[in-house]
Length: 189
Image (cartoon, one colour):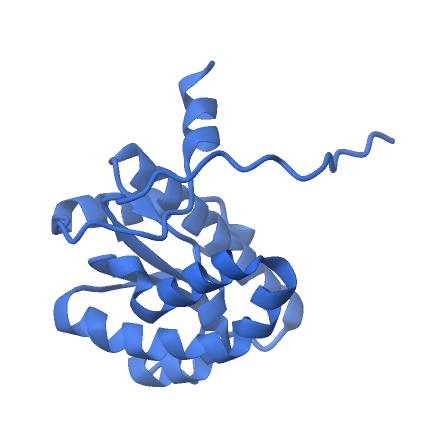
């Protein structure tokens, strides 16, 4: 199989991490690769905040508050064992030593805002693939959107930014199985 396809198919969302530190150079490299994503009208509307140490602990306290918003959905989607695992994950982001927040610009026109969010999402996907290439695990989290206002206030960005994702990153301490693809969504016309 082509190496590129293999990387895409083998990457997993990791929710349990080893406490081992990650070098600043590796984090900067995976974010830089993320920023090579395509973007609407080449606006490149992404910003990344990296949290380690005490700053990481502070942002995790804020992010973990999103449990109130996601708990009803967890009950709809998952069995009790997976619900408990997910709730535990949110308490400490799986012990990930690095938390990256992906932000985009707040724009007044909905179509431009959607383009900025989609562009930033493409950068997040690149970042996740680059992390996997580096032997790291990561998890794309949208649950923290429930506490977007508090996150942006913490960053002093409540007026000009939108939160797109929170991404815990670390060396994997789990090896999740390959989940089956749910259904085919290609429609030929």
